[in-house]
Length: 405
Image (cartoon, rainbow, N blue to C red; front, side, top):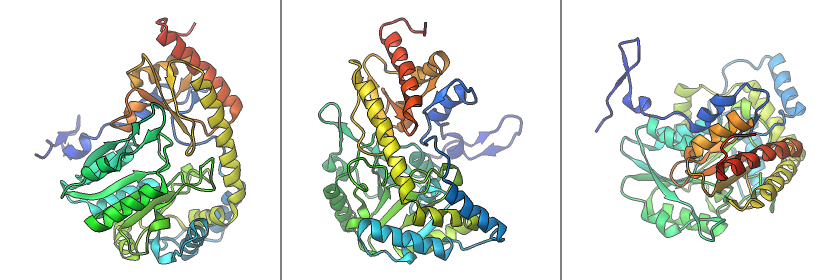
């Protein structure tokens, strides 16, 4: 049944019921309570506190001054596509031609373009959850259905995926399996053997694998996380979604890319004409600099996150009410607190009473409620102060006092 169209107040004119039914971000709901307050330590969004490196900004500025401010290639300037292909080939020790690369206006746009290309109304995507919520909303926008399969804490702490459950969720209307690894919010990383099994299953069933590998470089025990690309041929039904945001501190640049069969990239180029008409060329010049000159900065980012993650883990795991896994990838602690079940209410309370902001687990779909996501991509001094406030909030709430002294 189609949702009823919604008339906007004051206009007497309706908008799509699908759009009206999309909920606001619960992370945004928490941020709205304290955003703009300089006394609040904000750890609710998925970004660090380092600005984009100067050498990246300089490359973009030079391109602007050189007049690269006109319409450009739909799938990205050739120099960037070639740089990404070389980077991918070197990182994973595979062959990767530039015709498999499509530059997008953020990793988020790569997701919604892929949904537009794959989904007819009523089709579904099987999604490993808890998960960053935008994939679910993107699917709703194109009239698709999400089918969550939950990660499990099989040992009470660490996350794991049951492949039989994942494969059992696939039906005749499934068009893709969505895998976010390393995971936002849990930090879980899919083992290489499971990637191989999923890709083999997708080949046999004639469905796609959408692999969100945005955090592939933010890993603490290896140079990079396992990638589906290490098991795929150029024409396999695989779309790897990537972003410049995390490893190179470029969240505000809104640049991403996808690696796919060239035939799929050509279809995405048609959608790009009507969604963006190509990312700005001068921004892409900055992205070339990031890819070609940014290894030292990526190491700095990873070292910074490793230190922050260990600090947060030690502080949280020392609390008897808290259940948390040691972060192995991405830059989040995803933890639960015995006695606190309403994550949105408690997250708002931390902002108003303790001047610290984290994301509520309910924002991350099935399996998320009762947990909290803390982004530790920040300096240890700032994180230490934040943890003082979070610990005080947890103790007061669990012990029944409720508010800060």
